[in-house]
Length: 105
Image 1 (cartoon, one colour):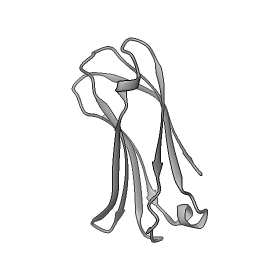
Image 2 (image 1 turned 90 degrees about the horizontal axis):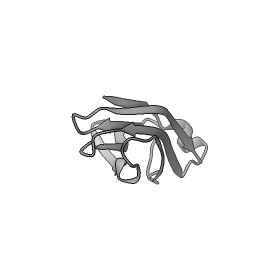
Image 3 (image 1 turned 45 degrees about the vertical axis):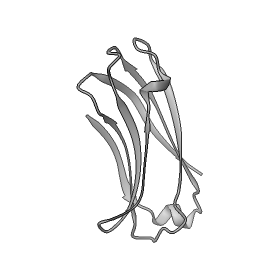
Image 4 (image 1 turned 180 degrees about the vertical axis):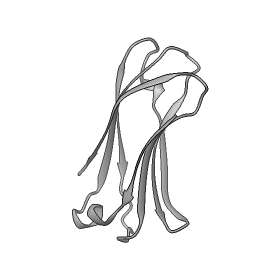
């Protein structure tokens, strides 16, 4: 399973956005479960920046937990560059996601 936000960066440049925050509530039961939140910037087929944070390390199994992660925006963006932010389950375990919120400032 993968939740995803995909868009061009024109407004990020116009509004001088320097940080992107991703917030979500997650629940899982299997201690072997694994997931990450990824922030990726591309220019055509070139990858400008790719950052990932493992998210279940800060949440105990069998109870809902809230995560918030921050990503820096690269300084060399052009208006046609693309941003993709997603949460990816990297295991075969079930992970429940309630809310997927992105803040930019």
